[in-house]
Length: 326
Ligand code: ASP
Image 1: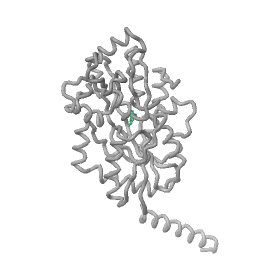
Image 2: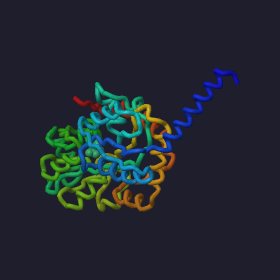
Image 3: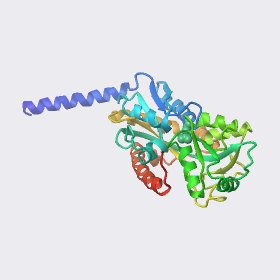
Image 4: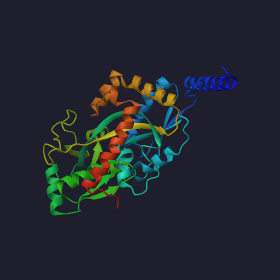
């Protein structure tokens, strides 16, 4: 071995040892997961639940940091620019990590280029909800009313480009109706106004809709899943009633800022895999209408592929359904 080669070899060995030491000592302190919506909504609820499970094998607390605004894009942009040291992550979803590039003329981040995908977690279907005393008893009623009264129905949503916004826009586009979208900083404040009758309808995810339905102050009209769900007795799917072929669910993934060490990503991914196999957790999720994904759909690589294909898909969907954020 000549001298130069020996030096190179020694440096490489040191680097490998440093990485291994970092992976072993990680995490050395608490970790932050940014949820870019108000507390109490479906993303927040799911994130808290998963963070709690992932924190155990990692041996450190995971703190949820709610950074609402602009349909999740504000918190996402800030997280893209956070330190890539394994202590800040983004809880991402279909809206700001899939549809946003097609909807926002100016976006302060690129979902595909500015993040390291860590793991994908289960999709959540949505349900069309109205206040308990609404005159509209079915999705067909709602559509018929909107046809007679263009723009009169107010739909609450979690902000421009959130899934509650996108699904309502697709619903209106497929039904051939005009609705008025009313943005909030998350689904939780939108839900408060739905309960109070300040808005006429809203699409919410099943995990937060179910506890509210139990309170009896809102009523479900139709599900966005292709199959009916036992948790929603007598609630039809949109596809079987008003809009054949309609199907929607919010997908989720955990992302780290670009440059986060690969071994950190692997460690967090493995912590999730070990937690997500827990039977009691799977049962709890299923009670909330959420089904587990297959193992090969959860990996960092799978989330990367999924993100890329969703960004492409939403460019087409947005054009076809004329979705804009004017
Ligand atoms: N995920 C919700 C939506 O996009 C927002 C939230 O979780 O508050 O509609």
